[in-house]
Each structure stands twice: as C-alpha cells, then as structure tokens.
Image (cartoon, rainbow, N blue to C red):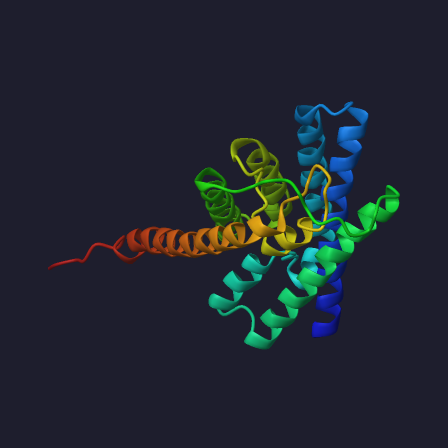
Length: 231
C-alpha cells in the first residue's frame, strides 16, 4: 500500500488514541467527583477499547503501530525501511499532539497546558521499561502465534498494565511527549518525559532480545526432532 495512505492511517489512529486517553481521563475525573481510582478504571477501559477498534480497522492499512517503539522495532526486524520508519514516527508524534488538543477542545479547556503531574523516579522508569517490554512481546509473539488475535491481545495487555505498573503504562514515546501538553488526569511534567522515553527504548530492546531468544528456543526442537538412523 502507498506510504501516504499508511501514514494517514497512522495519523488517524494515533490522534484517536490520544483523544481517548486524555478525554476519558477528564470525563472519568468529572463523573467520579475526583476519585482517582474510578477515573483510572475509566481511563484504562476506554484506552483498551479504542485500541481494539483502531488495531482491527487500521491494522490492515498501516500495521497500526501508533507508537514509535513499535515502529523502531519493526525497522530493526527489517519490516520497514529507514525512510518509512522516520515518516511513521514523525506522523505519530504530530498526530499524538493533535489528539491531545482535540480532547481539550471537546471539553472546552485551554488547548495548550504544560503538564504538572510529577512522574519521576526509579519505580516509574522501571515501570515504563516493563510496560514497554511487555507490550512489544505481546505484539511480536502474537504476530508469530496468533496474528488474528493481536487487537484483543494488545487491548487486554494495556488494560492490565494500567493497573500493575506504577506509571500506568505509557509505553509509547509519542504518547509521552503529547501528554506533557495536558494538566489533566493523564498528564506528565515535560521535565519527566526524557526518563520515560529512555526507559521505553530500553524496554523495546529487551523485548527484541527476549523474542529472539524465544524464537531460537522454539526452533531448536524442530531442528533435532528427526533422529538419525543407523543400519
């Protein structure tokens, strides 16, 4: 498929994802009367649901990356050229910002709001590395074992990761940078984005190593399954 169409799919998907993440956070806090636990539940459920929809309908068009670390992983595995990967990442970042602005506009909030939510420290960075590694492994192993189940697998993983990680699983550099532009429930301080992105890249590299190791391990029995015959 033409690169332009793939980039349009990536732009639509990434913008919709960020509009959902930020918008559901605003709505969750409003309807729960400021209860952060209920807001997180709403945020996680909405994000998982939109991921399922977006991956299902846009996956056949662009691969439904919506995430620079997914794109970089695919480049390192040879599925994309450098030109394609750079175009994907550029579109993802711009579309993520557009999605945040859209959410602000829908709730009649100031469009640009530099984030104030502190998200820093070893626990947060470890959480982002774990969240990103898990997301990449879900995708890479899912593509190998159950490609048709990828939308449900990713949605289920993200819903879980919202709750078992201290960072609520950003696991996405474009999401991280865009969420630095909101002071809502989903926000992050701009000063904290660097640590998150580095942790996400580390998680991606770990996932690629683990996937490679698992692939070698699964191939080994096949290579030795036919015993030699002697006469």
